[in-house]
Length: 411
Image 1: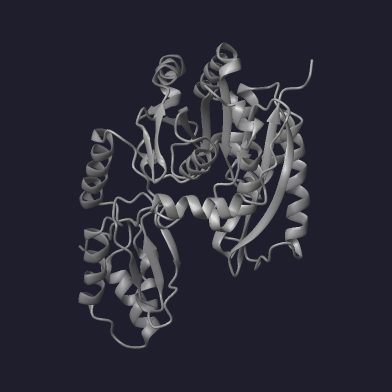
Image 2 (image 1 turned 120 degrees about the horizontal axis):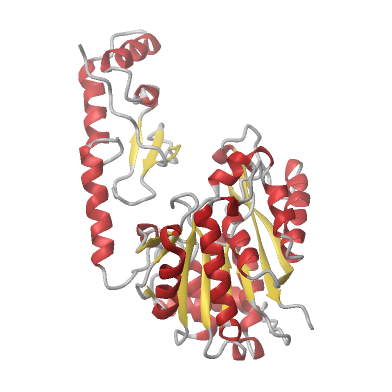
C-alpha cells in the first residue's frame, strides 16, 4: 500500500507567479524557516490538493494524467514531493528541524535585527533618513495638546506613507517634547502569532537608524502578572513588520534615546468564532488586567504606538470581487471602516467588537487585536482620525489603513 503524501503546511504565502516566462504558483515561507522561493508549474500546481495527509502519489498521478490527457510519470511528482520536503513546505521532520533551528537562533540572539530593511524600506541609514524626510516634509503638524499615543499603518511605508506621515508628523516640535523620558508601548498585529496570546521580547530592536532598548522592568512585570497569556521571546518578533515600521518612524522623529515595550497581539480567533468578547478567554482577560494596571502605574511616563491596518478586500484575500481603491464596493468598505473607527475614537470597545464580530470579521481587519487591547488597557483614551486611505496592494486587492491620534478627555 502506498503511503499518503505529506500535508502541505498551512500559512504559506501562495501567489500567482509574477514571471510571465514561468507561470504557475509562487510559494514562500512568511515564517522564514525556509528562505527558498519556489514556483510550481501549472500542471503540478493542480496536484497540491492531494498533499493532505490522506491521498497517495497514485491518486495525484491519476488526476494529473487525466488533466494532461497523457501519462504523467510518477518521478515528476516524486521530484515535487522532494523539493517541497527539502525546503520545509510540508509537515515533515525536515520542517520540524528547520523550525526548531530558527527558533533557537532567535532565542540565542542578543538583539532583534531588522527583518525588512532593503525590502520594506532602504537598508542604509542615510538613505532611509532621506526617504523618511521626503515622506514627512509636508506633514509635520505638531500637536499642542497632550497626547497619549498614535496609531499608524503597518503596510509597506512606500504604499502608506501619507498616513504614516500624518501620524508621525504630530511628533515634530512640541509633540516630541512631550515624549521626553517616556517609554513607548508598541502594540502591533501579530500576523503569524498564536491566537489569544501576546508576544514579548527583551531584545533591543536594531534598525538602520540605531538601536532601541527595551524597558526590561516593565516587560518583566508584565510577564510576571500576565502568566500564560504571554509568549516570551516570541519568534514572531524575528519576522514581524508591524512594529519594525513604527520603530523607524519613531527614530526619525525622536532619535533612539527612548525605551520600548514591544508587544505583538495575536488574533482573537476564539472571539470571532464564538461571538463572545475577547476577554471571555481567561488568559486574555489576565493580560488586559496586567496591561491596564501597568498603564495606571506609569500613566505619566508612557506613550502608546499602534501598528495597524484595516480592511483586506479582493482576490488576494479570498474574495471573488476585483477590488479597486475608492471605487464601487470599496466605498461601502470605507463607510464601514469609518464606523468602526468612530467606535474606537469614542473609547467604545464593546461597540467596536459588535461591529467586527459578524461573519468573523467580513472586512478582515488585521488591526483589530491591538486596537481592542489598547481600548481595554486605556479606557479613558479618545481618538481622532487624522487620515484614512485605501491602497491597491495589487491590481485586484485593496488594503485600507488610517492614522489616529489618542488623547485623554479634559477633566
